[in-house]
Length: 192
Image 1 (tube, rainbow, N blue to C red):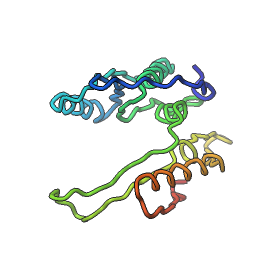
Image 2 (cartoon, rainbow, N blue to C red; image 1 turned 180 degrees about the vertical axis):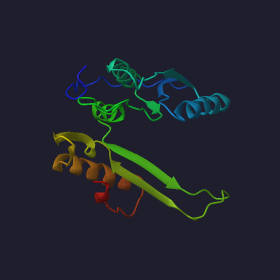
Image 3 (spheres, rainbow, N blue to C red; image 1 turned 90 degrees about the vertical axis):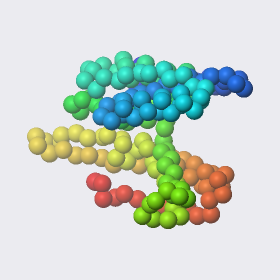
Image 4 (cartoon, rainbow, N blue to C red; image 1 turned 45 degrees about the vertical axis):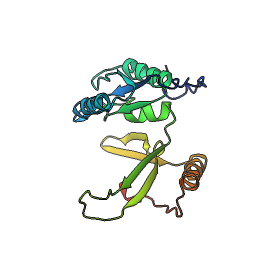
């Protein structure tokens, strides 16, 4: 599978019938990921959530993308996934970050993060209720780097009008559907 150019339309994922079980792809990843995924399984089991996890390991030392291709296949089949950080071994020439490859192949162009304080839970700040929506596949995530001359690395930050508009459209639709009254746009120019 070519991870860059294989945008094949997928058939809609059939939803579980009322009372049925759902299969979720679980990518434990590395670091603390496997430990967290064990807690997720435990919480789901105790809560009686009708979910079966299809666990897929991605080897950061693998020289091929076979395990990543399989993970993408299971995510498309199941329609949903939970993942820890997927490490990519040495980023030698021609090797793309597996996290970035996964985002690009599945067209996961935005990351939605809800930040909210809860009554009764001690916290430094009170009444926080914000949603961060960030671009997930372009800019720093394009991973367009090369060594122009020995010892000099250039990194290109490519941002297209098409994807910028797509992220903006998603953000404003999200705000409208969720009763959000304000959208603030920020940039992260300091990363490069």
